[in-house]
Image (cartoon, rainbow, N blue to C red; front, side):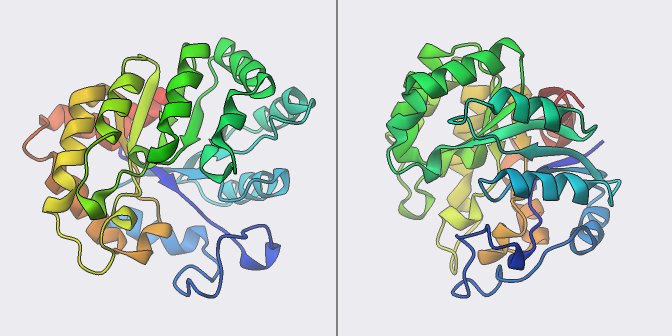
Amino acid sequence: MRIDAHQHFWKIDRNDYGWITPELPVLFRDYWPSDLEPLLQKHGIGKSILVQAAPTIEETEFILELSETADFITGVVGWLDLADPSYREQYERFNKHPKFVGFRVMIQEMEDPNLVLSPTYVKALSYFAEQDVPIDLLVLTKQLPQLVQLLERVPQLRGVVDHLAKPPIALGAMEPWRSQMAEIARHPKIYCKLSGLVTEADRMGWRKEDFKAYVHETLHMFGPERVMFGSDWPVCLLAATYDEVVDLFRYTVQDRLSPEETEAVFGGNAAKFYKL
C-alpha cells in the first residue's frame, strides 16, 4: 500500500492558521479531502497521513472529525499542549479516536528553540517515549543542535523529522545540516520524511538535480528502512504541483533504491512508524 505520509487540510475561516495569509494566495483558500483524492488515485496512492497545521487543540479536533469523511485518511497527526499539565488527558482523549496516530512538536514555531529542552518538555516527551508514541518533529536546520540535545536526554523517542529539517537547498549548502542529521540518525527510533523539499529550493526555478544530494545523504544516514515519502500538499503548491512532487521523489531515489526499498519508502515505512 502506497502512503502519502504528510499532507494537510484546512478551513481558513477557522482563524487558527496564522501563517496562511492573503499574501500566499495559492494557500489562502479551503482545502478538503475531495481536492486531494483524485491526485492520490492518479498516482496509485491508497492512503495518507493528515498532519496538523495549527498549534491548537481545536484544529486537532477538526481534522479528526474531517478524517471520518474520507477512507483514504489512514492516520491523523495532531497537536498537544505539552506546556499544559493536562497533556496526558489531552492525549488520552484523542487516542480514543481510531485514526489518531500521534502528535507533532512544532519546534520551528518556538521563539526560543531551547524551550524544547526545558524540564516541562523533556518530562512530557520522556513519558511519550516510554509509551512508544509516534511524534512528528517540525524543526529548522538552525534548530538541529537543540534536537540533538533533546535526543540525548530522551534517546528512546519514537520520532520522525519532517521535511529533512528544511535544509538550505536554495543555497546548495550541505553543512552543518549533514553533520547534525548524522548525529540524529544514530538514534534507531528516529525516521525522516522526504517532504517539503520544493519549498526550500528556488521556488520559481528549481531543477530536479538540486535535490539529489540531500535525498541521497538522507538515505545513506537513515537507511531506506527509516525514510518515508510525503507530499506536504497543499503547501508544496507554493513551488510545485502534486504530480511534480511525486515525479521528483521517483527521480531522486531511482538509482539508490531497489523496487522493494522504493515501496517501503513510498508507504511501508510510514505504516511501520505510525503502527497502522
